[in-house]
Length: 277
Image (tube, rainbow, N blue to C red; front, top):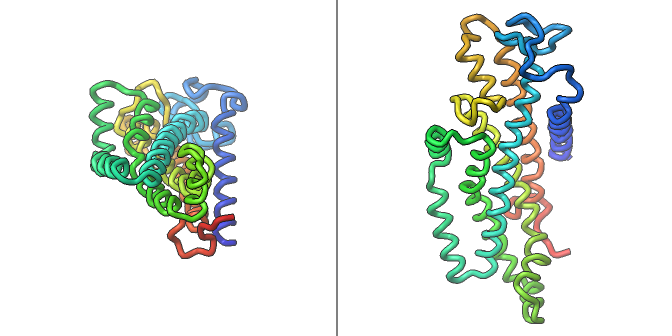
C-alpha cells in the first residue's frame, strides 16, 4: 500500500508536469525566446520564476526545455527497452549458439562508456539532443536484455510453454503469446529507470554545451546561467528554476520505478511473484 501511494502520487506529479510542458505554447502568452520584462527580475506576480539576463521569462523557458529534456529520455529509454526486450527474449528462448552470440555481444556493448562517447560524437558531428537520445538507446539496451534473457530462459522451460511447443506452435507465436506478456512488466520497470538515467544524461550534455545551440533544454538553461555569471550576481532563481524541474521530474520517475520494482521484479521477495494465470 505504501509503495502504491508513492507510485500514484509520483505519477500524478509527473503527468501534470508533462501536460504543462506540452500545452505551454497554448497557455503561456509568449514564447521562451521573447523579451518580456527587465533583465534579472526575481520571481513575482507577473513572472513566477523570474527572468534571465535578456529579460526572457524563465517559466516559459523551463517548460519549453522540459519538452526536449524529457523527450531525450523517452527516446533513449524507449529504444533501449525495445532492443533489450527483443534480444533478451530471443537469447533466452532459443538458447544455444544464439544465446552465446547475443550474450557475448551484450558483454562487448555494455563495456562501452556511453557518456564519454556521446561527448566525442557531439563535439565532432554537432549532433542534436534527439540524435544523442537515439545513440543512448542504441548503446543502452544491455541491462534490459540481460534480465529479460534470464526470465525468458526460465519461462522457456515451463511445462505450459513446452506443451504448446509440442503441439506444433511456431516460435513467433510462443514468443508473442506466452513469453512477451510475462516479461513486459519487467521491461516496464527497466524503462522507468532508463528514462531517469537518460534524462539526466541529456541534462549533463546540455550543461557542458552539447546537443545543439538552438535547442532549449534544462541543461542548456543551467549552462547559460553559469556562463552568464548568474552565480556571481546572486541570481538564485536563474538556477533554482531548472534545478527544481530536474529534481522534481527525476525524483518522480525514481519513485514510480520504486513502486513498480517489488511488484514486477521476479527475483524479489515480494508477494507478487511470477505465476501462470
